[in-house]
Length: 131
Image: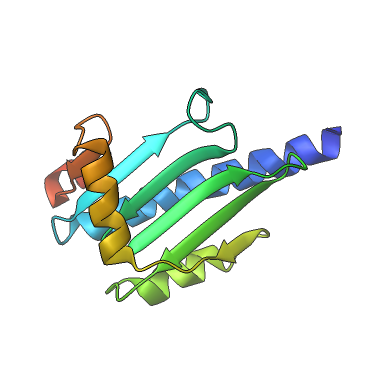
């Protein structure tokens, strides 16, 4: 991986985390149950997935592809923040939409991870103000 790729990847990671923080604040307005897991320093389960956030209407993942390039994969269902999130993602160089049925997918995630409080929480306005 060249020095140029490292810099671009760092920018994608920083951009992902900035968008993630803004999304958390948006969803906190409606007390959304939310999944947020960071694998950037732990590849024990999946060496390509770096960070995932998800809820019943949104999925966003930071991934390192097989060419060591960071990409953001996302899907937005009927979210009240769809246009705002899409506009933020439109500023990312490697953002790819994916197809999911978010309600079913998130339900399966909750079952699989058994609502583990390390990764799942209810976002509330008060907690978002402290972040």
